[in-house]
Amino acid sequence: MTSDSSPLSLTPGSAQLRHLARQVPAGPVTGALLRAVTALPLAGRSFAWLERHPSAQGVLLTALGLRRPIFIDHPGRPEPRFGYGRPDHPGVTELLERGRDRYRQRLGRFLTLSDDLASIPVRDRPGGTTPYWDNGWLPPLDALALYGLLVEAAPRRYVEIGSGNSTKFARRAVRRHGLPTSITSIDPAPRAHIDALCDRVVRTPLEQADPAVFAELEAGDVVFLDGSHRVLMGSDVTVFFFEILPLLRPGVLVHLHDILLPRDYPPEWRWRYYSEQYLLAAFLLGGRDRYEVELPGAFVQGDDDLRGLVEPLWRRLGVVHDYLPSSFWFRVTGHGVNGVTGGGVTGGGVTGGAEEAAP
Image (spheres, rainbow, N blue to C red):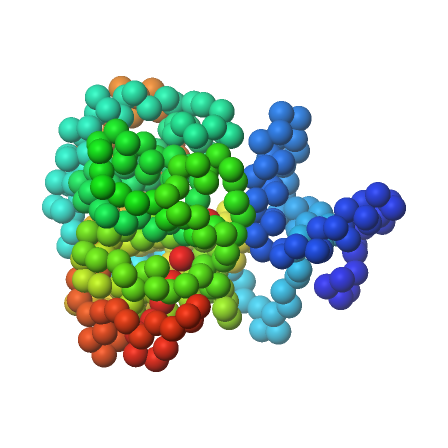
């Protein structure tokens, strides 16, 4: 079967829909379209079923021209190698354990915001601009970390690659605490209610964005990446690690989402073929003088002592669902490639001396 052939028998109407869908880039549309349709009152249940049945989802999206199959000549079996009945990765575990006191102190500072956090609703409508805890996309601990770190750091610039619920929490922190923070959203799928929360919107994929956005960041500024999570030729993750991360000056705070370290990705995520955290782990293990882990959400959740620090907050807020946090925060502490801390940027790309750029 070629990438253009359909496994389904399509009616003229659905064939027309497929033709129209193919006029737009597949990557940005898929996620945005699914999020939009899932929000419809009668469609949510059907799409929830598709999320649990990835093969059926793949057939549907391929038929509509929103996804293309990738053929691998040497396929491996995607099974977790660390965690889920096996030991966690020893090197990453040792690295994360070093920051235990730092995580504990930071979570304690977050708890001083309890009265403020209690005024954030547990539930709200998905299409609005109000942040809420039970949103299904940004788990409560991840939202708490973003909110608390912004209040703590009071950055001048917050650059977000991949916008949505995180933008809502960020804007509330800025407004509520009078932060001097400018919010930049880099996301190829514009949503009007999110645009209204941003000071600057860049409606292109990260790989097409001007790296100068990142080269100008200073100590205390924040980069928040929640993209495709896949290391592929020319993907947003590849561009971020190879071209943007080396550009960042010491003191810049960086976030990646859907990171489960020191465990592997969970077995139920096999079909997603995520690979971002493997590159992150390699960077951290090989560049310990360059980065310092500030708050690893999955590690906190898996530790009885650290998790117990925030459980009273969840009880007070009425957050009862046991979500899996996956935010991973680290700070740039040293210089980039060959001591470069910025510059080397020309136009929409990056030159050899320094590099980089980040739904």
